[in-house]
Length: 215
Image 1: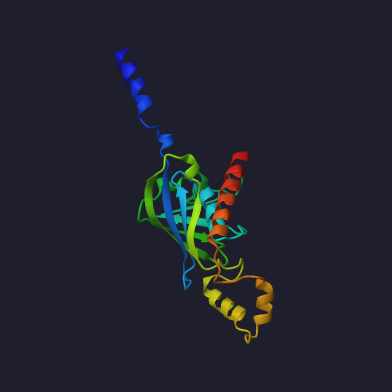
Image 2: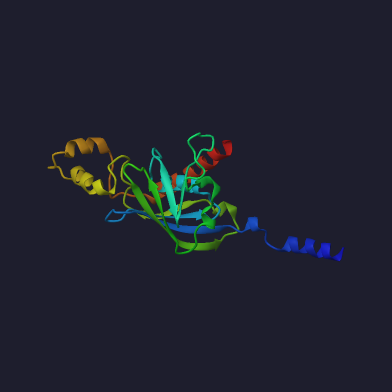
């Protein structure tokens, strides 16, 4: 009886694991682009990779038109649908929604996030900080806090074609300037708004969680 009372007292004084919220600080940089296009975001350590994908889409921002993949260590993670007859559980690729970021990385870790296998936009993701305990679930909302330069437009050719695209866009004497300008619309390559990126990160996080909960 005494042991059970001690256990009860301990359980009321020890902080619960659910109350401890750990934030991970990530820097995302597009590989092969100079000057660099980068973002810095905060995410909770228990964010699943499928939700992280949506957060990254919001931070850049991309439009989520294409397939994607995470490469962490020697493992590859992608969106999988077990109801799809073509899905092979033994092909070495893992289902991203079954893994959280916190169980796969630590401070100093680096991994890649590839979006659009045609254009092959590869992002180097660096874990800058881990372990900021807040104890406040309302403060663990993913956020974008810094960055530089605009994300390239969808289907603009990938990192090896981006410099040529910018030349055609900015040089009025370039033979393809008029067509490129018309295709790119209001795109401004050097403009980045942290406020807009942060809003997009929050919206994509909520949307992705709601979509997952409906399944």
